[in-house]
Image (cartoon, rainbow, N blue to C red; front, side, top):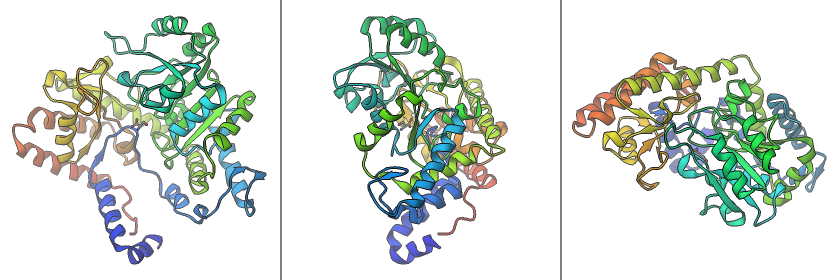
Length: 418
Ligand code: DSN
């Protein structure tokens, strides 16, 4: 109904929307930070809740007319606290970057030392990268993964922390295929008297379902996006111990944000509700099983994976032996209907725009209902495209046909009206 109105009001935009819906329906989305939100989440996002300013917090707004916004934000907060077992939740951050910005703003002064995972080894820009606010406002130091194993080396992280004496340590990653030991990070933080912030943007769904070690008991502050494994709207949230509640709330508003996106907060509440329904744990378990099945198929087809496999929703494919860059591989795969992103591998000899790796993940195909059999097939199709697609364009065509068949067998948004 709303979309039909869009078609009438702005046919040009409606046409782009129809094309994007078709793209989502007819490609395999393997970018591990993407997912298909439910129709209920999209309904809340596209609702009248978009029409209101509600600066402030429930019961203490700077705008009148916020009664129902208080209700919906309280609901989102309670659901977030319950799902993650947290003492306090702030559901206002617009993005993961805003959440991290607020976490640092609450705990640090400009110029303070922070220690995070280097972007080149799987960390995120907001963990101290020199091109990001986090590396410009704060004095950033980095840990990497072990050169041999590709895994975090906690003894080395401790040594770096002892050397640089950070006021805050960030534990979390955007491209790390193994479990993160948050308890060990807590011990390291305690050794040097640092705050511990856990950024669980990628793994929030796995954490909520109990399939990844839980940072909530150990970290002072936990930040997350809501649209990756958690399968909500694009947005973020912050969880923290009660003692930081006031500082975190003040850091989000008025510290780094003004008007909250109340329609997105409503959608976060819906997603947090869905995450407490029957089937969510099973979904998260299947994400891991599918990721592991895809990884096995790649290994069987002579591909190298950083760390040799995966414990979570993604894998990092090291393409150096295949003499193809991550960018070229991702271009070929996209032509065959398989959308992955190029990604640096640890100690990558190529620059970030080229890269020696790709980072396939399983959350979105799992939302479509695919299981290990399909995940294995997708691993084989990836291998086929990269091994033979450059020499023989017919391979791309053949794989594309198989991709379309798979997508049709596992439809998504089939009854969505435009
Ligand atoms: N862009 C996200 C990702 O793809 O991992 C991190 O911000």
